[in-house]
Image (cartoon, rainbow, N blue to C red; front, side):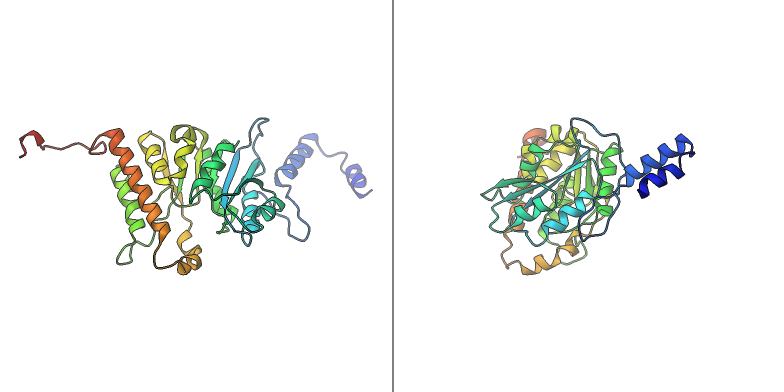
Length: 294
C-alpha cells in the first residue's frame, strides 16, 4: 500500500523526471544478500547485449574455500553486466560449493591444471567482451578491479597491474628481473615489471583472438604475443599484490618451485620471440658484420 500511495502523490511529476529517477534506481539497484549490507556497482550500467555480457571475471581456484566466497562477491560488484567464472581444479575442499553459493559460475576439474591452466580454461568458456583475471586467494576491492575494465572499455587491449615487484631489495628476485628483462627485449621498457604474470589484469576479446586462449597458460608468452602482435598494452593501475600475498610467501619452502615455473615460462616466451622474429628477437645487429668474424 505504501508504494501505491507514493505513486499517487507523485502522479503530477513530469514524465522526464520520473524516467530519470527510474533509470537511476535501475542503475544503482544493489544486489542483496541476507545478513549483508547493500551496495552499488562501481561501473554504471551500460546497454546490455542479448548475446554476451560486458565482463567475464576469471578466477582459478584450488583449495581456496576460506577466501573464494569473498573474492567472488567483490568481483560481482564491478558491474551488473558480468559473469564470474571460478575454475575449480584439483580441489579437495569445499571451494566449488562456496563459489557457487556466492554467485559464481563454476567450471570443475577433478585434476589440477597447473599454475595458470585455469586462466586458459576460464577464457575458453568466457562469454564477455572483456576478460578480467584475478586470484582466488587475494580479495581485491571492486574499486581496484574496475580501472582495468575501464581501460579496456576506453580502447586498451591489455590492461596490466602497474606493479614492478620489490626492485630495491638486494639481490633482486629472479622473477622480478625476468619481468623487466622481457619488457626490455620487447622494446617496452616503459612497462618496467608490469606483466601478464601478475594479477589483476584484463584483456579485450580482440586481444584474446590475437594471443590465443592456449597461450594464457604461459602468461609471459601471452604477454610477448600481445606486444609483438601490435596490441595496445598498458600498465593502468597499481595493486600491491606482493604485500597482499605476503603471508603465503612466508610459508613457502626454501625451494621455490613456483619461481622455477615462472622463470621457465619467461624462457618459453624468449624462445618464441627468437623463433618468430629471428635470433636477435627482432633487434638489429647494428653495425656488426658477422661474416667477417672468425
